[in-house]
Image 1 (cartoon, rainbow, N blue to C red):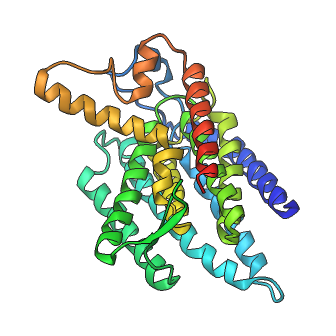
Image 2: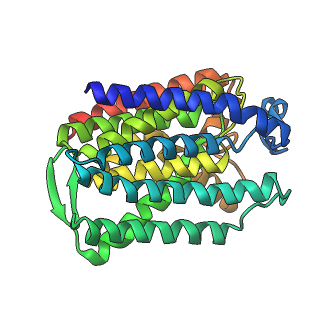
Length: 327
């Protein structure tokens, strides 16, 4: 436990230090937020705030994981942990890279549309397929999936498990991406979800996930210091897709993808609000919500950004406790 605390502190300090260095560089390069004209009026004042801050999250995770992989590779240590950390790191950074390309096209090369949705989904698909195959063949984890509350494992047919796992990864990354629309919301929600999955990993004694989750928690908390309202930096797709990759890869590694329906209830509701809004508007010409995703609806109902983050975080904390009890 003391080693985990050290990892948490190292991750937090490294992220804070990187933020202090990188944010002024983003300002100097004029990599600023572009707000939608059809978004909440209160967000127009954020125009020009440094974004693409997900690079801070990515660099911090890389540095910490390189150190930990090097440390665990030493003779006498558990070298298997080092080997198992590498693929998880690659998948996480792969998702972040897709987001980075999208951000770069929009913010550096001034292509307002960014990466074409088809190209983005194709990139995420390739990474998801590769990770799923690694879990089945590389780690020989099989297709067993844990059912919360019933507390049993069921073995899914491989023809169903592969597309199901891919759907979980694609759905989670896009759900976390949609959640990133209010100062501090995405890193707060992600930190709580990752903490929940890390606690479950401790219960199941999955050391590589415990270590990986601890790193991500520290990084999220460090970034949150600069992303709280009023935000000094936004994470952009680089950060939101990366964190979605973290959450989905951890859940699948632990054979707990179904638990995401509980612990990640906020990203799930954010996604459903967008789907319902679009479908209902196309059929009736009217809107269910004042604006989608869901956090914008509450903003237009008079909630301040801090209240949105507080309420959504408390809801995630409650569902995290429920998820742990369901194991």
